[in-house]
Length: 289
Image (cartoon, rainbow, N blue to C red; front, side, top):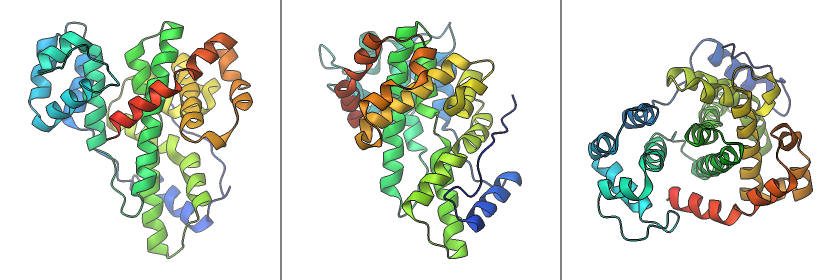
């Protein structure tokens, strides 16, 4: 897949920092995060039709901290268990293999979050946006009768390049002694995260539909093999932004986006998605802890 992404140069970005960033990308000098081993194995298990609950439980059990986090979240109001869940086997029985895989992958990826001293708030905001996007992508896929688990991964990982861009430009800014203003940081994140994200997708050997959603969700008409996933991810991203940063745009602007028509979603579908805001915010708060 061609992952060459056109982007505008010098649109709100200091030229010296952008030049240094582009050079590091071109020379493969960007430090990419490592996919946690457990996350990779859980993703592979989730895509294996022969996988069973016992194998998933055994895999999660190998990491005691992960197992404890999975049980904590499985018992949270966000998942509304009918009775307290005391073991991973019980969690599988109550939530199912797919739901438990989703929780395990999410927690594992959180553990690999890029650490950027002085930018903890921004990293936390990016993670919350990823969680909300994943949750909305699931709901959109359910409406469209698409693979829900795949859609969740597309939403969760669509902006995986942003923390890496943030860390890299923060480093370059310090090295060049050129301070960055908040709007300039946003310009770098918007302008370069898909390009970096496509590198991460290759490094992590992510499923092709997830890789294409990462690369093209913001311009889904350019997607070739997995346009539906790119469109669903685009909408999930917008819904997440509307939920977490309400002053980004108003409800009418949200509804007017062409992605609704392109996905064959109708006004009642839009209302259904917007009515999920409180539920998804609750889920984000639970998973972000």
